[in-house]
Amino acid sequence: MPELPEVESVRSGLEKLLAGRPVIKRVRLYRADIRFPIPKSLPGHLAGEPIVSVRRRAKYLLIDTPKVSLLSHLGMTGSWRVEEASVLRKIKKRDPHDHCTIELDNGQCLVFRDPRRFGMIDLVEKNAEHTHPRLKSLGVEPLDERLFTPEYLFQASHRRKIAVKVFLMDQKIVVGVGNIYASEVLFRAGVRPTRAAGKITRDEAVRIVDEIRVVLREAIKAGGSSIRDFHSVGGANEVGSFQNAHHVYGKAGRACPKCGALIRTRMLGGRSTFWCPACQK
DNA sequence: ACGAGTACCTGGCAGC
DNA sequence: TGCTGCCAGGTACTCG
Image (cartoon, chains in turn orange, blue, red):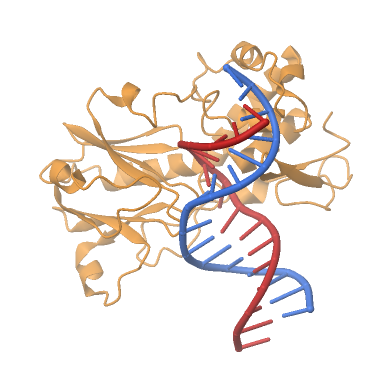
């Protein structure tokens, strides 16, 4: 599910709910064998610690205590939700995809659910974020205007032969851009996703960087492209609305909103890709 | 180093 | 109503 805007929306939601610095009472692991196994030592390290902040780096969430941070990635289908612990206890049959619960001293419980188990949960020691294997090779944050510049993107793409769309999704270059937003950004920038990254001009790099910022900011404001509501017990209501603003993603065969040409699709780097053959050069 | 392809896993949906 | 096959918003790994 989640690209940067969705993760950011989870982050801000959790931050509000955890603003009272609740103390972690107990952590339970129901299923540790997700993408990267959840360390068995995790409950012991977190019990008794207060939650002091919730941050995001790339598509990762960091739930901070004074000593360690809980690092998590939602993969394709992961989610965090908050439930009343008392309600959770009453439910007779446990959801088989709830892999980890974190009980807090305020009566709430954080629940990590991930049906496909592509997500991950780990611990990061304070000041060890730059050496963590999942974090150390990440590229720049797209909303960091000092680091993510057209010149940076232009230089990074120098001599690269991969399709520019695959290049934009490379988390070592710029983080947070996933399959939906990559298609949307290139449509807005007027650049065909199949173009070799190394053939992008400086002007096009300017437009791509601009559109990444604009699209991600708009999507964050809209609450992401449809993410499940982690406040509610059932978790069924959609809160994100940005999917309504998609111009090409999932629109194969429909009219381009700018020129009316038919939107095309094909696989690129194993992922479905959408573009307007008339608007995107 | 780079690029292409595949694997991981479950659920939902279209088509028969 | 089944069944089958395909697709899904991410990332790490292998191989040439």
